[in-house]
Every structure is written in structure tokens, then in C-alpha cells.
Image 1: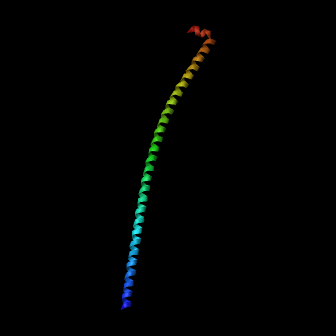
Image 2: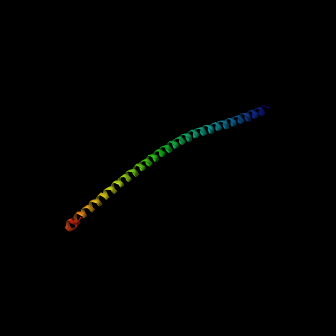
Image 3: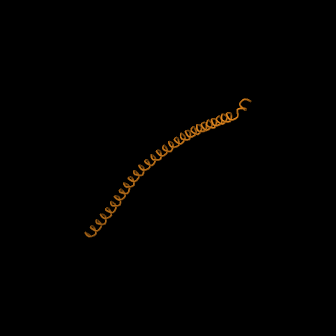
Length: 109
């Protein structure tokens, strides 16, 4: 009977140790899951911040491109005006030079 008691005691002890081991492993898995979840949330927050920064940068570039287009348009208008002024000066110069070569035409007008 002493051997039976010892055998039942040993089996009960081994069963308790196995259950405690499983419980400890379960707690370790839960702890690791919570750590990974915390890391993942931090990563998501950083990713969201990166997205916001990229969106702000993109909007700033878009505004910069709009300003550049406006400057380009203004510059083109000024260049067109200068071109017209140069053409007008060339026409005036041609009229003066043609008027100097044909004095009879100057008297006719």
C-alpha cells in the first residue's frame, strides 16, 4: 500500500507540475502577445504620422507648383509684352528708314 500511495502521490505531483508548466507557458505566450500588440500599435502610430507628414509635404509641393505655374504665367505675359514692344520698335524703325529713303512719299502725306 505504501508503494501505491507513493505512486499516486508521484502521479498527482507530476500532473500538477505539468499543469503548472502549461499555465506558465500560457502566461508567457499572453505576455509576448501583449508585447507584440504594443509594438504593432506603436508602429501603426508611426506609420500614421509618416502618412500625415507625406500628405503635408505633398500639399506643400502642390502649392509650390501652383505658385510656380503662376510665376511662369506672369513671366510669359511679360515676355509676350516685350516681344510685342520689340516688334513695334522694329516696325517704327522700318517706317523711319523707308520714310528717309522716299522723300516724295513723305511730302505726299
